[in-house]
Image (cartoon, each protein chain N blue to C red):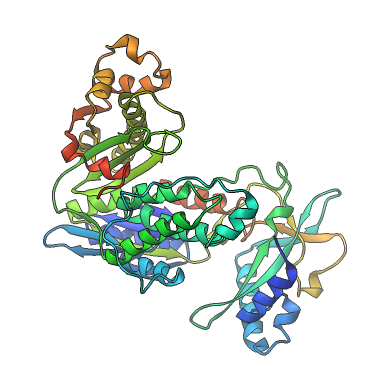
Length: 182
Length: 310
């Protein structure tokens, strides 16, 4: 069962702040601030959302900043949407995103060995943020942007974002289109 | 080319092709080039290109799960299951259970999950053992936990084992079923598919309904294996490995009754109870999408997917 007190205790051990306010006053405030600014910058550069007036009776999905210390000591800040606050049929329709099976990988490896093929690997940075959305989704204005917070306004999402139910699918469709085009 | 969320595996005949794909990808997305593939989802890959050998194993992962489950200094064991022990479901009431148990459900399930990932990656030889201990997931007892620890001890002894492609050119499917040895008398069916000398696909599964003969148990396992062939055929076709389509459609069974039934619908009175969907196999054989072969039990690779071997 989810227990907020235990959760807090656990997080305290890991020394990771829960909220933006915590992050900006704790011991490592300077590092968290830099990481947070950087993430905000890349979200803006990516054109993830536009601030617009919300039409009446539209669902607005929640969001929060997530703070994570990487094993190598880096400070990582990420904005996540509360996917559970999305309404089926309006905020999302299809959510299935295929992933490769081990069998497919092994089959490929057997062929690579047989034909002495080259075998390389690459990683897509912030893959999900590349996905383009089919649906019109409004997200609350993230914490820490006072100049943009005005009543009746929210972020209309243009690109996918972590936590969104359809993000894996949007990303898969994007890269699928890329492979088909090439 | 293979994609796992944000990790990409690129395989190609020439380095220039790889460079070209990498350049095109980097233009469209922000990419990190990790060069030659050494590890993917915990599977470690080593190659001997002169001899066209490729080995995959999970030595590092196995070390981690032994650590995590406090089994690192345990006494190694050379088999994953004790062939003389029969595991039975719990008959105790809830109250007794809590007292008798040495292990919590959470610990048991998490340990079993760790074993499962090793099994799915490179260790078909623990598939039957993992399947067996999974049956007691909801109320594990001391003897079940001993069986789980035995699998860990087996992995500790054999952590460097993995799969090797290229050591022989053996390809094809092997299936087997073990009839009604378990407590609930349900049969266990399993199959293994080999390509270029190494296993690429395997399953060990307790069958969902009770069967009345070894023939029927084998026939059900055959259905499962035949479905896998259909999928492998599509995949090989997409990858342009046309020669292997025939190789992987070769399915070897060791039960004459089941084979005869698939080749030719005889013994009608004794096999009427075999469900219609089971005749799926016969249709595929007729369409020449699956080729069945007899393989003596002594040479049956899939034997290990259905029972504890001494």
